[in-house]
Amino acid sequence: MKVAFTIAKRFLTYSKGQTLAIMLGIAIGVSVQIFIGLLITGLQTGLIDKTVGNSAHIIVTQVDDEAFSVTQSGFKPVDDFTSISYAVDGALVVRVGDTSASALLRSADEGALAIYDYEEKLTAGRLPQTDDEVILGNLLAEELGVDVGDTVTLQTFTNETREVTVTGVFDLSVAAINERWMVGTPSGAQSLFGLGNNVTSIEIQVKDVFAADALALTLKDELRSGYSVVDWKSQNESLLSGLNGQSISSLMIQIFVLISVVLGIASVLAITVLQKSKQIGILKAMGINDTKASLIFLFQGLILGIFGALLGVALGVGLLVSFTTFARNPDGTALIPITFDVPFILFSAGVALVSAMVASLIPANRTRKLSPIEVIRNG
Image 1: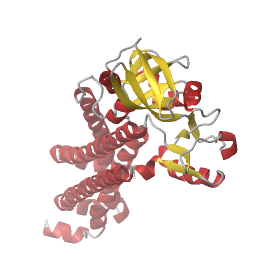
Image 2: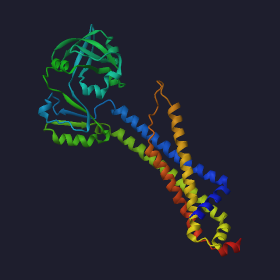
Image 3: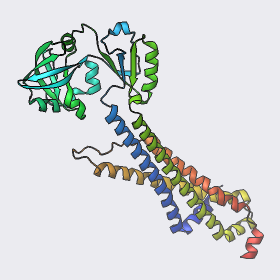
Image 4: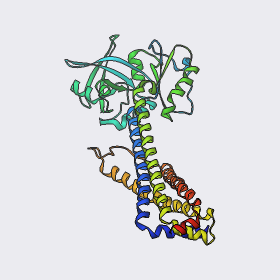
């Protein structure tokens, strides 16, 4: 094996330009696989985060949309739930002088603060601390012409009224929410709508967002009858279809790049067999058997694969660093959040190495068929 390895190195160093071209071809294939794979993954992660990152993954309500007791519903938290909000919400009218607007008052317990991240989304002021304090969406505040410290009147459809102080303004980056939502304390919302200790929904975030549908089915089986359980996947089928299309497109690109690399290596090494047929014939005549002659090209594939994969990883990581550095939103955040997935990068390098070895099997097999007498006789 040492002899075959030494000859393989000499063959590669003899045609340095050809060797570098093969390594560059492997490197480009690896870099494209890393760049496309992590770019698509980052894009999908960003879309999922924008869609359900600050919203409930599972929502439990009564079928008749009435308030209910959490205890009587049979709801039991499990380890797969990361945040649970026992929510109270109701429609009402907000009045400021002669100006009025319809709004949705929502409660903010610890679970809701974790799910919707209200504190981070505040553009002014602070969170409500008492029953007569609320925060508003920025578009609703603009429509009413109010700011932090102003007083507004809430009127429910049962003619219950309450004056509250605006302590903050938030922006959840969703126009429909910013136009209608106002947020208060749970006890304040319950007393205003006359719900006692009941809630109008249970909102849940889970560890694995893609397991939300399975968890929703399990939860529905455990709850008593009369409750509706909706997960985000059933409400975003078009988004999931688009993500699936992206994944398939990314996989197809990587496969075709891989096939191109394999064919390129195989064709170049096959030509090398023809170029070096006389030397191989002489080596066989000197006593090297078919197995060792084949190992020459297998070692060539191994060497090309290792150095090509290393160069490809460096090139791919460099492309990703450049992309994340220069592709920025106006606010300075990354256009597409990309995580450097080390296992995926190592997998891509490993695939390239295996591909180079597989490509070298074709010329290695062809070497076996070379007859030293015919090669020497034909020159």
